[in-house]
Each structure stands twice: as C-alpha cells, then as structure tokens.
Amino acid sequence: FLTDYFQKKLIKPVLTKKTAFLISVVLVLEILFLFLLFQYIEEIIWYALGILIFDIFTPLIISIIVLIFQPLAVLGRNQIIRMAKEKRAQFKELLVIGITGSYGKTSTKEFLATILSEKFKVLKTLEHQNSEVGISRCILNDLKPEHEIFIVEMGAYNRGGIKLLCDIARPKIGVITGINEQHLSTFGSLENIIKGKYELIESLPEDGLSIFNGDNEYCFELYKKTLIKKRVYSLQSSISGLPSDIWAYNIRAEKDFITFKMTAGDEMVDFRVSLLGSHNISNILAAVCCARELGMTLEEISRACQKIESWQSGIQLKRGRHPPTVLHGINIFDATYSANPDGVISHLEYLKIWPGKKVIIMPCLIELGSSSKEVHRRIGEKIGEVCNLAIITTKERFEEIKEGAIGRGMNSENILFIENPKKIFEKIKVFCKEGDVVLLESRLPNQLIQQLLR
Image 1: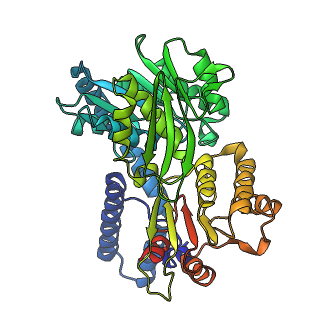
Image 2 (image 1 turned 135 degrees about the vertical axis):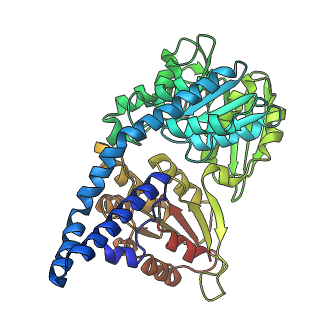
C-alpha cells in the first residue's frame, strides 16, 4: 500500500465532510492517548508498546466511531430529504424531468438543459448529484421561484433507489436512456436493473410522459408495456414494426462534430453538433424528443444544439503543452469522468476516424457482477479491432481483455498491464508520435493525466 501511495498509483479519494470529521476525531483521540502515555508511562519500552497497541487497534477504533455516529448520519440524511420534499411541494407549477439509465443520463441531462434554456428557466442537478442526498441538496440550495423546469439525473445501486428519488423530486416526465450490465453486482441481476430503472416510469402521474430509447432492447420492451403517454426515439424510422416518434439518419461523424437529419412528425431538420462521435446522437434524440413535447420546434432545437459543447458528452479532446521532444502533437481524449461498457466501445469506435496509431489506457470496469468476464472480453475485441497499444492499469479482468484483443489479431506484446503512472508515461513517450491518439477511459490516477496534459 505504501509503495503504491508514494509512487502515486492510487487514485486520490475525495475528502468529504464526513471523512474529514472522522480523521479529526481519530487524530484527537491519538493525541489524547499519547498525552496520557507521556503522563503516566516512564519507561520508553512501555511507551513504544502503547503506541503500537493504539496503531493495531486503530481500524477497530474507527469502526466504533462510525457505528456511534451512524444513527446521527441517518438522522441528518432523513432530515435533509424531509426538508427537500417540503420545499418541492411548495413549487406547484414546477415541471420536473427525471432521467435515468445505465449510461447516457448525464449527457442527456446536459443536452436537454442546454436546449430548454433557450425558452425556459431551467435548473439541473450538478455533477455527481444523482443520489437522494445530492438531489435534496440541489432542491434546498438551488431551486428558486423563477425556475420553470427542473432536470434531475437519477442514479441507483439497488431496487427502490429510483423510487426514493422520485418521491423527493416528483417528476412528470421520465426518460430512460439505456440499460446494460452496469451495477449488476449491486442490483444482483439484469432483471433487477430493468425493474429498478422502470421505477421512474411507475412513479409518474397518470398525465405524465415517458420517453424511451428504442435502440436499446430492454428499453424498447419497457416502452411496449407502458400504458401512460409515451414516446420512443431511434436511429431508424421503425422498430419491430412500430414507428419511431423521432429518428435520425444521414449521419456523418467528423473529428470534432457530427451532422445528421432528424425527423419528427412532419418536421425534418438538419443538425450540426460539436460533439465527438456519432454515439452521442442517441442522447441528443432523447433531449430533442423531450424538448419537442414541451413546445419547441425542431428548428429551434437545432439552433439550440449549436451551443452544446463536447465536455457535456463526457469526452474531450485535449492536447498537451509538452515541448516538441515530449508528446508533441499527440491527441489525447479524456473520458475519465465515468465509464460503462457501451461508452468504452463507443469511444473506441470514434477513434477510427483519426489517422495514426491509437492507444487506450484504462482500468478494468467495476460492478459488472457475473457479466464481468464477457463484458471485458467484448471490450478486448473492440480494442483489438481499433488500437495499436492497450495499457490496462488494474489486473482484475486483464486476461479477458487480452484474450479478446488477441482474438481480433492484436499482438500480445501490445496489450500491457502497467500500474505505475510514470512507467505508463514513459511507454507513451516511446510509442507515440505527432498525430497519434491516446484515449483515457474511466478513473485513472491524476498524476498520469497531469503528466500527459502538462
């Protein structure tokens, strides 16, 4: 652990108020303990033994402190939720849009907020505010009388989680962006994930509106069984014989933008959006479908989409400021905000547009449960199809990734397991030249990202 720490291979955790409080309490107890030892113990050997005993029992002490304060933490959480519900109830005319899914919910929230802000006063949940406490704090701190629409990203790790969020926010419109194996280990089964996401639709009022991704088989099955007002978006005009309410076609993806035509009813409009990769169109469709139901025309929406920026999709092109002899002119794509199987594969597909050698640096994905081996093998196959070099920073499913990549013809010598950021950086310096592409996926050590971009 200490070796990893000093070599900066570990990802720095976020210092929350709770962890800061816990550290403070432990430090105070340790100082008090040392003071008492100094007062009553004279022999140095017993003094050293006392310090050793305290060190051994520190994990137990921390556990006891957590247990003691856990009831207070629960009370505080429940109080925040209760206050948020009370405040939300005061906003009778507020339209709340809930967005959930295994992937695409953050991008859809960002796109929709940009579009609707052209016509309405919009509030959205901020980064990482997709839990009951995060949403409650957003309501308490940010919701104002002038807001007309509140867009809420909803995340959950088990059944009942989305329902709790709906009880707080009370959405009238619900969007499910897609369902896959993400968080399978916490939900227990794919069936539980599907039922968990559908809690959003079940929580809508009778006059509510549900919106589904018709290109995702699980979403489409939910669409077919839904009885309240519903809409489906797709990359095709019909799905299994059922017409799409809105769809996109004539898709063209360039390095730094995408163009396509969109049709809804008797409207047909050209779109040009500054996003990286055609996979973003699905989330744009979700946002457009919702905005159109709120009275905006496709022409208005198309103009609003010109204000969308690449960071809103979770992947950004960044170029380092190194001198000509170090990583000069290498294109670095930062997709470290979050990762899921569909996102990784979509980002790899996007790299095909770029000339030069292609490199991916990523850890193995987590919370995939029993599907983990197959998912990583599938990711490996895509890596083998697209990349010239793959550096995997964790070992849990490295062999499955390697197996998949080799199966698609990739040289085994170019599929590496490296934890140390410095060694990764040195490998990139040797392997890459101007015009090559490096994709950074999922959570990676800050030191590595800073080295590549400085």
